[in-house]
Image 1 (cartoon, helix red, strand yellow):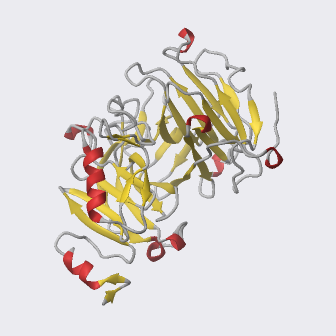
Image 2 (cartoon, helix red, strand yellow):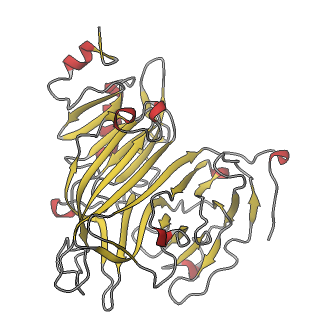
Image 3 (cartoon, helix red, strand yellow):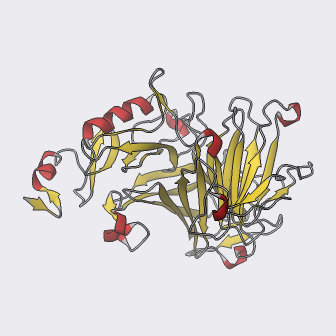
Length: 429
């Protein structure tokens, strides 16, 4: 017998601990942790994977989602609860690629160090036992005269998993992946500020910099996850419910990626990248010297992808405590990726959706990649940014009742070797 496409006995067995019975996805709890997984997966095998990644990372009330291709870890607990990992507010903190056996229904880590019982996350947090910084972050700043006040989901309050979480996307809306048994994930909360607030920001949750006026902004953080694909979507909706949100000096959606210290890396983009100055430093014009077109993949989203061979600078004394930033031209960024085909590291790519951004950002948004050595404990890491404003003095104000929405699609492309010559063209600078 079946109920809504799911075997009836399955709904009965899980009725004590489950939250809902969806057509393609199962909701349950495991050691005070929310667990959602595709119905085709063997529950025992996925619990074994959780045990491996849980050490010093996953906390109570966090959410774990298993598709057939990824293990997703969403972080909810705040720093006040002893959290060391800085991704919180429902943000994706860890991402592990999986292998699925359709015969046994078992899943396993694609990259697993059996000797050390360790699986590396594709994101910075969890890429080694010591990296507990960010996996994903959504943040920005306020226009300020005296202080650099930061707003962000890292400082969010009252974060909850909503009732829409765990449902098939087709039952929620007609968003992406609805045809691929997609699952909808949603968190809600109140936007917060860094501890060093001031200069018109009068509390941890005040979002209106005008003196004597208190603002409040709430958020909905949405993820759309397909069952069979190496990609997902992140969507943030920030709504000013009391007075203003801003003026804000910027808004970022960032994905923190490992440094891969022993390997040369490759950036991929459309359109071409350009170096920019960071602080008082002049741009490094040699950083993007080695460039080719459509060398490792031709993605359906763009006709041409530019690939930049990034030399390893780990032994360069000038690179210590430094950061190099490259970006797409303002208002034109379509794709930005980090990978290393020669070292069997797939390309993690970000695609912005600009349908809902404010009109002030139409000609301002950029895709940006940072190679960062500034944190001695972390050593080298990369940050893939979707940034709304590129002009230093430009601001955006979200007034009461209005919403700021930013959307990114992330995709892993396993390009392990160059394409044949007849499928690509080269361009040398």
